[in-house]
Length: 188
Image (cartoon, rainbow, N blue to C red; front, side, top):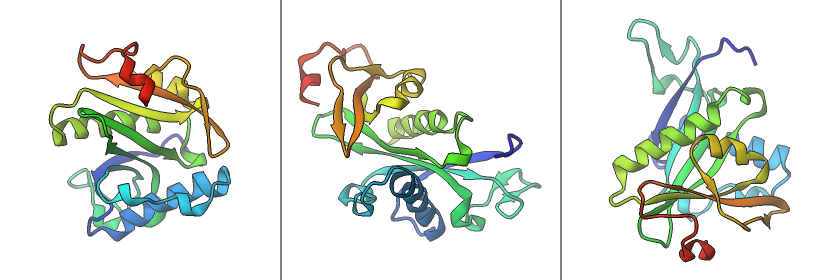
């Protein structure tokens, strides 16, 4: 991918009226999780998609970017303009949200897009959820450095296998109340 590409982020739900944005999110998941990793396509969506807060990373093109207003025009987005996605969902723990399905297509990686999506998704979640204490994730072990750069702490002894992939559990406390050593983290 040309490093001169520019990107923008869009936050919303998959129930929005913008079908190309929604289809773009699912297209990224398919490319990353099914085509690249080999997961079962049935795992691409679940009941949490409807209530989740989603973020999409969109490659700006002359078709979807208004040079006069210098802003993206979401109605001009094509499915293939979406190059990354992530979501945040509530957990059974009060004040804890889970960051999930962070994915960027292969030719858009190594540009900080995943980290930018996670940080922006957290900002938006803080605006949408009351009494937020922490973000939690169970992510691919290979992405641990990415999440650490975004402020996440690895939960000790949390390595586990999910869908034949090594995962680790991580937490990002949003205040001093939540500590990695707290017993409740053993439940996650």
